[in-house]
Length: 147
Image 1 (cartoon, one colour):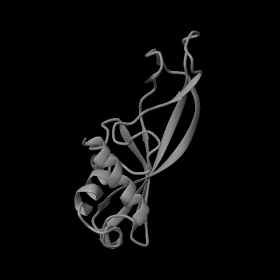
Image 2 (cartoon, one colour):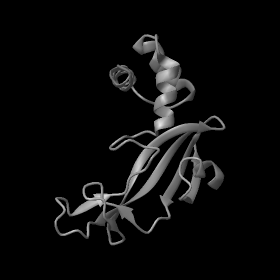
Image 3 (cartoon, rainbow, N blue to C red):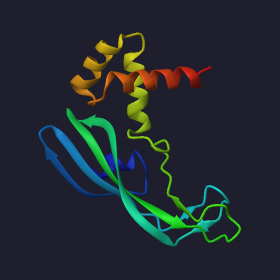
Image 4 (cartoon, rainbow, N blue to C red):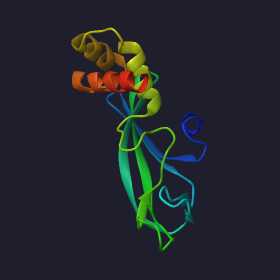
């Protein structure tokens, strides 16, 4: 399991793993001790809080995957910086996203040209449980980005 998660981020560590009713819940965190402030670019190692994000990912061996991602917030050390705290960023998830980029890309690729209802049925059958509205939002965002 650790090797699969390292494909997302080399600094990811698996805390625990459980499989219930065809869903693999994987608790992960990053092993980094510091992060760069997105506002001023200064490195910080002073952790403010930790919280969990629930992220959907591609299936593993026909099991739907939910990543419980421990995320750290840091204090910015720069007194002139406009922000006081910031959350660590992950390359495999867009800011505020609830699914990995690779899952989003797969959904968009698999559902182009389908009706919303058929796309929902296809995606929910083996990939991930999401609504047809979410699929339409992903397709619309993808079309806007490709222009």
